[in-house]
Length: 467
Image (tube, rainbow, N blue to C red):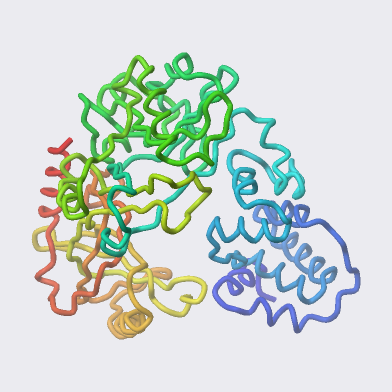
């Protein structure tokens, strides 16, 4: 009989989970175990011997009904994954529990463990007030994919620079300061420059804004900010090379009052009063409002975004409330076009889920003298038709195989879009692209027309020169 680890691998690579669930004989010892008990056992299964794994899986199959086996098989194979946005999940929980979506969104923010809280307490938010560090759900913007003139009268909107930093909330409650990232990570210790705010902000204050590297009053490139991220200790050199500041653009709580139901215009007025009372406004500063008379003028202003290390503009309706998640029509992000580079595909690997039978994960290279050097991996940006074409090319033109990866003839040229570039010791090229994705398949270009590593080095130098 095959090893059970091989069986699990087969489940991962195919859609046999339901078939196995259906062909197994009826269970003889049905159980009513709780979900978290199954999850705890599954989490420890990786450390077990082959015999222990075999016994666990056989016992599980013999204690579950057919539909339960199907879910169990999905869990052990890692295929019980469905792409669902936070907002969709929250709305589903809200409908099921007859609770306001904003309340549930606030409840699932922050730090909590499924083994320490009941489902009822989670959706009801009973645990929120027990932790004074709790942030609010972030209000998010949709990408503006139409002309801004379609938004109506310019005087009904506020424009701000869209900063390329880390979105965060500064929370001051009960004499303590907490700094949260949008990823719901408590990052207070990483940014000691902001700790003085524990003495400057009133209790019951929550500010929304952007954590940035700011030097001599100028916002630095994101690659500079990266030097400060995810570090347990900060030395004097890092404090000097990448000093931190916080550009705030909203206030969500003041003197303990939740302000999210107030209009953005009134929140901005209060925010200006609060920040103007801060002594060190070089570290905590108001994100400036961009003044404009009409949309055409604003479009011209937007073209200079990269000169100040901005990604573009934010457009916020003056009468908008601070919603949890995205609400179409109130906040828009009007980003400048990304950087692009022409590359050639040199490696391909099969995807997962519905793409498990197609080569959809690609590695791209640029020229470095007379050789090719990898610069990015990407798997998004192609249509289903293009994926099938590329897959056919990979099958016919693979020249080497190592594990799941195929080396292919360097013939297909793709334009890769990305948001930024930084030096990297972990990458062979010495550079790392930020958020690379396929912009288009350049069927009009040959491999000898792609960009060079020197082109990217010059781009990096130009971005650092701005800083």
